[in-house]
Structure formats: structure tokens, C-alpha cells
Length: 88
Image 1 (cartoon, rainbow, N blue to C red):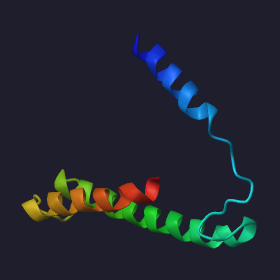
Image 2: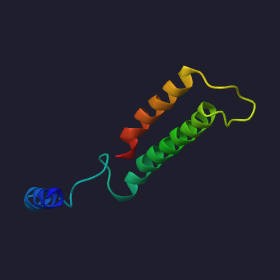
Image 3: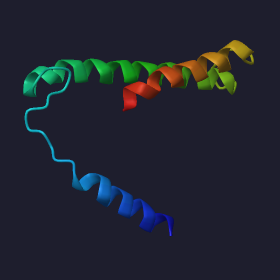
């Protein structure tokens, strides 16, 4: 029942929407949009690496590190919240 309702909702909402060929990404078109997209991708990759290091510290898998404190798990969650808008 839910898949049918979702399908009908997408159909009725999407019927009135037509793509605008004059729209742009970040006020830029074509090659001009590549620089901001690359910068967002680099920021997302950096945040993912930070989260990886924090996760290995939280679970005690980082060589030479003791068990983590509460601040490590808080920083892990905060970097995830910062990365969330970059994904969209």
C-alpha cells in the first residue's frame, strides 16, 4: 500500500514540474560549476577521513592510543552533522 501511495504522490507532484534548461549550479554553468563541486567533494573527503580516524580512536583500534574520551564521540557526531549538508 505504501509503495503505491509514494508512486502516486511522485506522479502527481512531478507532472507539473518541467526541467529548466536555463538553470545553473551556484550561479555558474557547465565548466564553471566544476570548481565549486570539486571543492565540496574535497571537503567531504576530508570530513570522511576525520571520521575514520575518530572511529578508530573510539573503538581502540588506533595504535598507541588509549581508550577514547567522551569528546572523541562528540566530535565524531559533529563531523557527521557537518558532512550531512555536503552530501545533498
